[in-house]
Image (tube, rainbow, N blue to C red; front, side, top):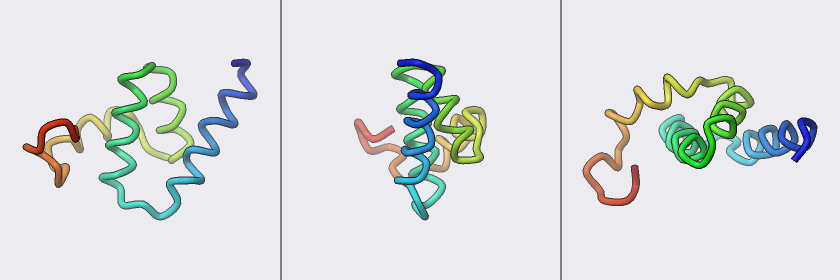
Length: 70
């Protein structure tokens, strides 16, 4: 993907998340980051969040302790 296509992916992902609760956004950022750090960073930036905040939020995710969800 070229840079414009990557940015479109980040922006479309952020738009699709809409008014989802922050813990969902943070979880998605963590999942994207696991796939590719640049992907996670791009999605986080498009959402106005950071990967660091997403990593820190893992400890308070409502799914904590449920296998496979974090």
